[in-house]
Image 1 (cartoon, rainbow, N blue to C red):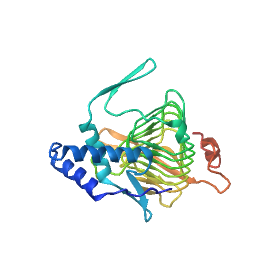
Image 2 (image 1 turned 180 degrees about the vertical axis):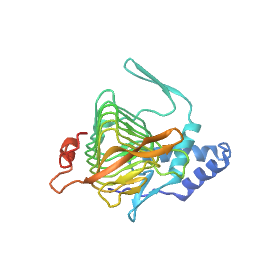
Image 3 (image 1 turned 45 degrees about the vertical axis):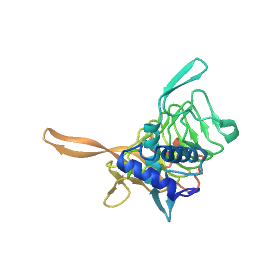
Image 4 (image 1 turned 135 degrees about the vertical axis):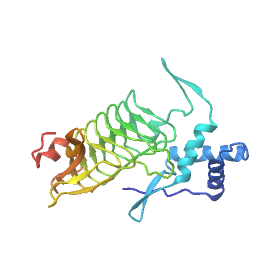
Amino acid sequence: MNSAPGTGRDDARTGVIERAFASGDLSAERAALTAAVEATIADLDRGALRVAEKIGGTWTTHIWVKQAILLYFRLRGLTTTTVGPFEFHDKVPLKTGFAAAGVRAVPHALCRYGAFLEPGVVLMPSYTNIGARVGSGTMVDTWATVGSCAQVGRDCHLSGGVGLGGVLEPVQAGPVIIEDGCFIGSRAIVVEGVVVEQEAVLGAAVVLTASTPIVDVNAVPATITRGRIPARSVVIPGTLLKKFPGGEFGTPCALVIGQRTASTDRKTSLNAALRDFEVPV
C-alpha cells in the first residue's frame, strides 16, 4: 500500500498543537495554534499529510495529526452552506475541486474537507469523513461510509452499505486500515482500528471489531486471532458457541475460509472470489 507522503512533521507546528491539546487551553497561543491547525487540515485535504502510514511494514498513527483534527472542531464555529436547495450547518466545510483532482463524485456523495481522494476514486452516494484517505481506482459504493481517519488503499471496492468506522478518540488508537486491492462486501462493518491486509475479500455482512474472533477454519486445530485479516484471505460471517447461564448460544465471529487463488485478479466480483469455496454469500 502506498505509504507516501510521510509524516509532514514540523517541530514548531507540531509543538503548538501538542501543547494546546495537552493543556486544553486554546487561548495561550491562539494565533499560532489556529495557523498550525488550519495548515495541518489543509495538508490532509491535499494529500501532503496523512493520519497513518506504513513504516517498515508496520502501520504507524501520527497522534499529533489526530490532535489537530480534534482542535479544529474546537477552534471553528458553525457556518451555513447551501448547495442548490440543500442546506448544511456545520463546523467543517465540504470538500471541493473533484474535477481538478480527477475524482468522480455522483450526487449525493458527501466528502468533508480534510479528507484526501487520489485521482481515479469514484464516490457513489456515500460519506467520507475528515482525516480519511482513499486510494486511486477505489470505488466507494452507494451508502458506504468511510469514517474519520480511515485509510483505504488503491483498487479497492467498498460495496453498498459498507461501514468503515471512524477513530478520533482516544488519539492513541489506530484507524481502520483497508489495504490495496481489497473487496469489502455489502453491509460489512470494519471498526476499532481493524487492519484488512492487501487483496483480502470480506463477504457480505462480515462484522469486524477489535474483539471479533477471526477463525482460520483450515488450520488444525482452528486458530483464532483478532484485529487483523491476513492478506488475500477470503472471509465470511460465522458463529462460535459460548455457554451462558441461560444456555449455549452462537456469538459472532469471522471465518477465514481460504485464500484468493492466483487466477483471481484484483478486479474480481465477490461472487467470483467465493465460487472456489462454494459459499453462497
